[in-house]
Length: 281
Ligand code: FE2
Image 1 (tube, rainbow, N blue to C red):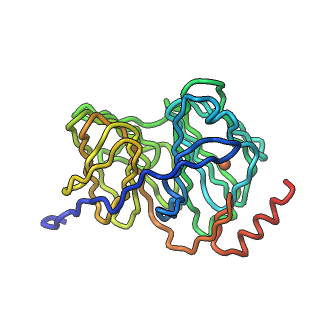
Image 2: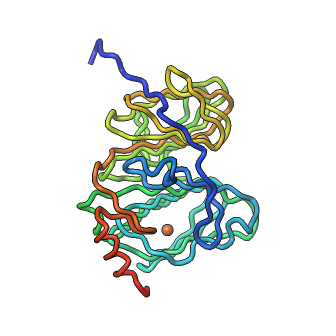
């Protein structure tokens, strides 16, 4: 496409989210799924957790169901044990990811596998298209050493969980429903990271530490803030300070969304059916 200008993505909004308590008293910051940012199709929810105070996380998330979407847990520090009604069990450790396709439904628990120390990470909910909401549950789990890592010439490092970088480093998670990219990027101060993100994708940047500026306007996002990317195809992020951030994007589904707690379907009737199906379980 010689001669055509590639549009750089700016930020449309940014948010620091809201403190919430979920599960059995776990303190979280809800970034997506709030009155300020209800969803960013196909992302239904993003929770960030970070605490070295055991009382903030010890209760964990005892048995609860999900239907109609995927839950992605990405841990930066600590250990979480998950266990479900289909007999699937494992421990996610720092740098590891679990990408669970709940499909028609499972009941699972997500409990910290530690009694003290830092627990830090994210849970992202990714919607499924209507045609896949009732598929059998599935799991993709990768420990830190199975995540693809790209070392940049400028001293940066990109951990690729899903999708591919412009240099062709491809993450282990495969998702043909919304073809996500999920990158965890570390950059020294003053350095720049660039990545092509398909023009139809919705996406965001969440700053884990430090501060970045985005696009030509160089609008800043600091520590613990999320910036929603505006239209375009090229993402250009500069480290204003030494930084670590997530870049996540995927194709929107553009379908009706009906939410009811742990169930996300297309219609209210389907959500009520989910409550009925999981009653007493
Ligand atoms: Fe869950």
